[in-house]
Amino acid sequence: MKRRSLSAFALGLFVFLSIMPVAFSLIYFSLNISQQMKSSAEDTADFYLSQAMKRTDLTINALRNSTYYMVSNRTVRDIMQADVAPDAVTRRQIEDDLSRMLMYNSAWMQDCLTGVCIFKDDRRFLTMFRSSIYSASTQRIRAVYEQLKDKNSITSLEVFPEYPSYAYCISDYIDLDTMEPLGKILFEIDPQQLMQSEFLTSLYPSASILLVNGDGKVLYTSFENTQQQSFAVGDTVSDLSSRSSKQFLVQNFCPSGNISAYVLIPYDEILAPIRDILYFYSGYVILALLITLIAGLSFYHLLTRPLRRMIGSMNQMAAGDLSVRMEDSSYQETESIIHAFNGMADRLEELFQEVYDKGRLLRDAEFKLLESQISPHFIFNVLETINMRCMVAGQPEISHMVTNLAQLLRSNILYKNQQKVTYAQELRYVKYYLELQKERFGDQLIYEVSYEEDILQYYLPKLTIQPLVENSVTHGLENKRGGGSVRVWIWEESDAIHVQVVDDGIGFDTAAVPLSDTGTDSHNNIALSNIHRRIRLLYGKEYGLQIHSTPGKGTEALLTLPHDTSNV
Image (tube, rainbow, N blue to C red; front, side):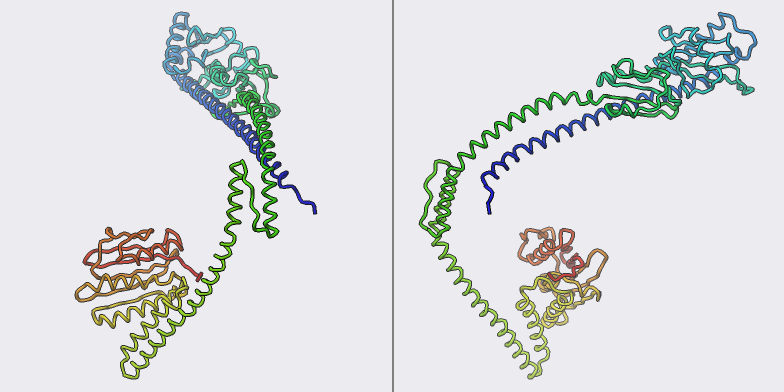
């Protein structure tokens, strides 16, 4: 079977690992930056449109408020109800008063609103132009009125191709007494001021903007400033999706005026800032890859020459020639391999000897293990003999103490490799210990063990509860005059099992000997720290031991354990 060349594989892998990260980084850079540029363009366009729609909404609401103002103005109502038109002086005075009032109440509309006219009929009307700069001609206003006099909507903007720079809306002038129309109020608006496209076109000069009314007619367009196919004011826009393949489309809607705004930004313009960077980066990457490839080939040829010699020496050793040694090399890296190989050969006999010595030590350890197993059996046999003699001698109390002591020793000696026990086993150890201490202290020791039967089937680390009881007796009650009590309560909750050991002994200052996960407590609390650390290592930081103690009043130890059903 023909085997592949590891050298060729290493060379191919080197080239692959050199090219692929760079290629992936180039692709990632291109896609990620492109996406960021598109996202930035979308955020910018969306912000621009939201501001434009906010201005449009404010404009529509201001027009509605202006209508209410003019309808409620007493002077205007008198003129509109009169059968005779006012003279030129009165008319001019009324127009100036209304113009100043509108300018004061709607100062923010100075750029958007170019003219306001109140028509009683085709011949009689009042004009309220905001300033001479934005004045609209009487002829244009009257021509628009003739086309819109049958409509009545402040929120519907209308456009006329012959007047592409303006948009209009018209509303009835209502007699508040009879609620009958007396005439029309015509507003003339500059849509370009609503859009204020300078902000967007300064960032994206080729961006196209459309303002469309509820009928789909174009109110304003910036297409005439671009080289692309354009819409004209007054055209009906039915579908912009055909333009979205090469352009980024963003839209927004003004519900109060039933007006939509669209922004089209060419993808080429969005991605233009990174195009030159990509070209430069690509050239740099190609040059770096060529240099890396040439350097890799040179390194490959230099490295394989000493490697071949080392492989030959290894083959000799594999054939059984333990005297073979590699020659010194002029390369630092291969020199380390040579020294390691020669050192391995020099120590081969020592390693064989060490293996032999370790085998002998292992056999000795096995013999000692067998000998150690004799001692526990001997101890239990002696204790059993003492127990029998106590029973014969009529000493049941001593016999009971010997039995409890034997059970405690059995749990510590025969089951020392068992890491977990059931709550039933652990409580037996507690019982043996408390009964032995009861024999020792007599009536000065009172104890109580209370638990739920359902918890006896669960497992916990061996010797977890018994050391807590021992700590209460040894450090809490031995030095207390008159003795005391130890109580053990075990109960189950939905998320854990709780074990509480309480004594009324002398207590201690918990701040002086805090529990630690590192086992650095004082000697009186090493057992407590070990229990806490062992539980956390087995079950996690949500479980463990809490100690509450007050000097002179007693100590409370609270264990929190999981529902463990495994003895492993």
